[in-house]
Length: 367
Image (tube, rainbow, N blue to C red; front, side):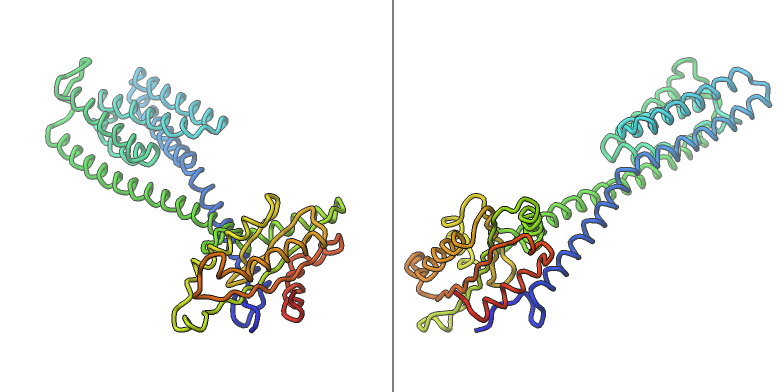
């Protein structure tokens, strides 16, 4: 029977390299996306603050043209405070400061322009910008509270003439129109923020699954071929640098039904679980076992000479030959084909191709 391969028509090494390339590309892509998510608050903060500063300067110039010096200097003060805040944010790189400072400054500006009437009685118009600012920066939970707080506070100011507010600045029709548009924008912004947060959480969850799958074989729970390649590379470099002993064991299992159960399907998961139990019983703490694919396994044995590796391989072969008796499973027969190789400093140049050599040896002269 031929040695099991990871994919028909492809050598094990090629399949593993294809898998490694795919995993690395996926992880690099996620890393880029994660950086973009981390920077989004700073980018939005810069955009919103820039808009706020330009708007304040325009209103300030308009106020100076009307010779409303007090109002102009107040707006200049807001522009200066916003500029100082955005400078501190970009200098410190604090994400929470970017989110909450921008929202607070926008809220204060909305209240001020609403209270004073802005330019030509258009103060409440700036309220329409606040919902996306708060919800995009603070998220759909805290941002929603910020939007509601601004709406409630401005409603009380308008209804009860708080702090000397003159509600004759605006007609009821104008306020009702602004309120309707404000609520509509708030709902749309909340929906966008909700699905944006959900998409980010799903992306992080998928990344966790991807990272787990890239290092752990799902069927056996052992090291995956990607992790095995990295560990082997580390071991080869260690041997090459420090001239310490190290060995490899390659095992190919031939699993088939016994004569009485030849029409019964093989419970691959159960058999694999038992193989892992044997590995845990025989191997040392420093040894690493992994599944290359199908029924082929690789064991990395640090600080182990070839004689010691052969002793371990013979012990494994003896236990696998008694599989039926050990696990009281009369449905399958297991034949373990095992080969060992000691790693030398010169093997560091060969790299993962050393596994191809072991496969060839296993096929021609299994022990």
